Length: 130
Image (cartoon, rainbow, N blue to C red; front, side, top):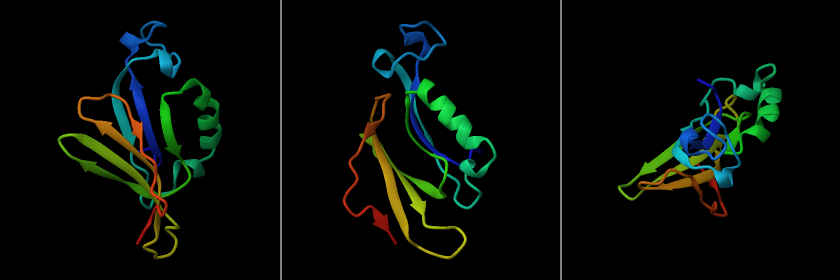
């Protein structure tokens, strides 16, 4: 349990022009799957742990297939599945230290049936819920 939010296109190492096991630039890669990681609802987020931020910042330039991450906030992932597509929305709460029903939508992605890449969705203007 990584207590953080992530959305990524999982590279297919066999399809990478740089050879198996390498992660070339996103435009040169083929992808094998999509991975969505839900944030912690109430546990301390990954970013609060010693060295976590430095690890993510150091690793980010070598991992261009990561399309979204949030290591600082508590929240949840809402997943809507139909036969045609999967839609994922990352929602975050104001605070877990006091009772509140206010949440904000930070990112959304759609994966078409049979696809192996994330498609970003423009967030509607409000982006909050109660």
